[in-house]
View 1 (cartoon, rainbow, N blue to C red):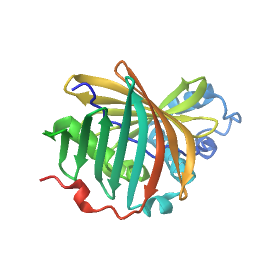
View 2: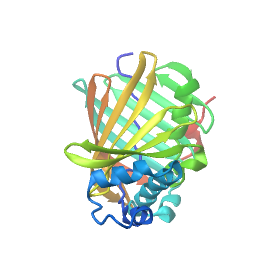
View 3: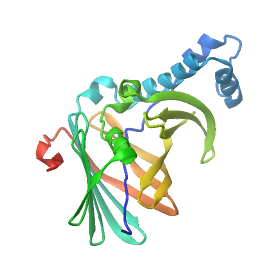
Length: 262
């Protein structure tokens, strides 16, 4: 099938304050804007402190996008997205229900794809063709569905690691590596100046093979106290996709029937 996409939006706006952590490992460095200083500090400490640095980044992220209390108040979310795929108008609707249920509808031209996760099982439906989702693809989908994943990734058996700094669109960014239990890796990049999440990178498993999916985020806006990106650009294989979030609604009382798999 020509148009097979798996596009997932995460909470991606946060602020990073690394000075407190850096002070605990070295009192001799005063300039925390230098990527060379930060990298040299992190690479000389043990893995436990490295893990602590990654946790600190995520804690500040949660605080800046609205705080843990506000995030835990979100019971469900509806996200409406529009875009263009190879010149064809594309519509995407995400339904999410706490703790870990997901429905994704993608309409590209006259083709409709649904991805459903009911908390334990996954199913892909393309027009009238139904396919059970299994293996590594199911593992990834199960993590995509967790609404509170970034509040405590280790609770869900994700391994955290600070993985250095990289230049993203001319700006320095922290690279945080999350590793799933099946070994799949997910890199998240956080702008060192603004603190925003600017990119994530992960492997996408499809019938055609494994592709690197790179997603860039921009145009952050407040929706009922939580900050979300409203512009998303994605590269998957040789395709570059651009999406605009039209609306985000929370706590609308989504019915369980939306996530039913017979």
